Structures are given as structure tokens and as C-alpha cells.
Amino acid sequence: MRKITVLLSILVLALGILTAGCGGGDKGDKKAAAPAPAAKEELIVGTEPSFAPFEFPEKDSKEFTGFDMDLIRALAKEMGYKKCTIKNMGFDALIPAINAGNLDVSIAGFSITEERKKQVIFSQPYYKSGLAFVVRKDVNDVKKFEDLQGKTIAVQLGTTGALYGEKLKEKGAVVKTFNTSDLACMELKNKGADAVISDLPVLQYFLKNGGSDYAKLAGEPLTAEDYGIVISKKKPELAKEVDKALDALKKNGTYDKLYEKWFGSKPAK
Ligand code: GLN
Image 1 (cartoon, protein in one colour):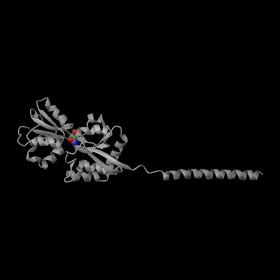
Image 2 (image 1 turned 90 degrees about the vertical axis):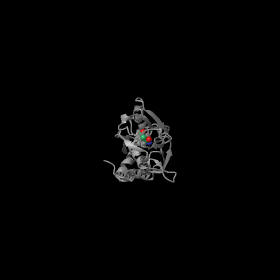
Image 3 (image 1 turned 135 degrees about the vertical axis):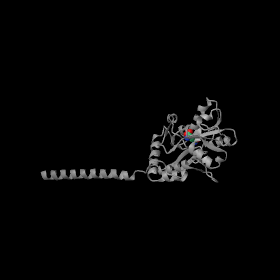
């Protein structure tokens, strides 16, 4: 009788172990069968495409091209999005659109500023830029920023260049504000302005592509500014993903390749 009890006990124990084993296996199976994270369909990007070589209309196409455009498409791919849709809007409308949830990110040669950081999250810096100014070719009395006092200056609405122009207003300068960078430069061509304050790489590109017929760089660069990608404060996870993808593109050579494509040299380390 005692033997039977012992045997039964062993049997019960063995069964217990077996069931526990099954339980473990079951858990493993569940893990394997877990659905893959939902495929990310579409990254909606906002830009203001009058800012060559960062964002501008591609010739004979409805698409936008430029360093920022190539970079955001590569980032979207890296983050696992199937589609990257680029929307065109006024520069001053981009941050409100981000905060209204109408865009996922914005890339538009956005300088990282303390003021903007109160409203949005910036990615890690992806390009070193800064303000400078050009004057009309026939303007010969402007050698430095202070010489712009009393001149007419064209700037783009909502930009750091426009803020810099404001400094001259108190000193008797007339500041004309335009919706796009192209229009500000056009005003110079039409002799409606003596100078344009904008980002140095954009002014350099403009001079190289026809602008030097009627404009020239004057003075020293005014500021050093870093560009960052703009993300809503409501989406800190997305901001982390963007930074992670930027790290990956910097590591795998894609970032350097795009930089060289658009600026003809390797980025300064
Ligand atoms: N970098 C400048 C800024 O952030 C200009 C940007 C632009 O005109 N797209 O204000």
C-alpha cells in the first residue's frame, strides 16, 4: 500500500513537472506568434521649398529636391515608413501645423533656437549653417552689417534672418518681409531692396545659380546656427526615432554621401 502511495506521488510529481514544461513552451509559442509591429504607413513631412540647396522644386517634376529632401526620405526609410509624403507650406505655418498634428515632422533648414524650443522638439543638429547677407552689385558702401543702417533689406517671414533684420529697423533701415526666400531675392533684382539677409549656404547657392549677375556677398557671416528637424512636443517617441535614424545614417555613410552630393565636400567633424 505504501509502495502504491509512493508510486502515485511520483506520478503526480512527474505530471506536475510535465505541465509546467508545457506552460513554459506555451509561453514561447505565444512570443513567436506575436503580431509584428504595425507597419508604419506614411511619414507626413512639411517644408517650404524656396530654400535651395535644401528644398526646392525639382526641374520638370512635381517633386521637391535638395539635401533636406534626400535626408528626410532616407530617414523615413530607415525608420521603417513605407511612404514619405512632402507637403509644401509657408515657413511660418510649419510649426503651427506640427503642433496642430497636421504634420509628423518638418524639415526646412530650421535653425535650432531657444525660442522655437519652447514650442517644439528639435532633432539632433544635422547641418551647420548661419546668417549672412548679400547686397546689390551696385551697392558699394556696405562693408559690414552696421552699414545696412538706412538701407532697404529683404527677408523671409518667420526666419532668423527676419529677426536679424528687425535689429536694423531701429536704426533707420526699411525691412521688407516676403513669404519665400526666392521673392526676397527677386526684390533685390528688381531694385526694391539693397540687401537680403538669409542663410549663408542658401545665398551661396543663389549667387552660383544666376544671382551673381546682380548680387554679391558683403561683410562677414553674422551667426552660427544649427539646423534640426522639427517634431511636436506631443511626440517625444517620434523625436527619439528620428535621432536614432540620424545616428544610423551617419554611421552607415548615407549622411556623408548626401552631404557630398549637395555641398561637394565631406561634413566638418
Ligand atoms: N534657418 C533660417 C531659420 O530657421 C531660415 C530657414 C528658411 O528660410 N527655410 O529661420
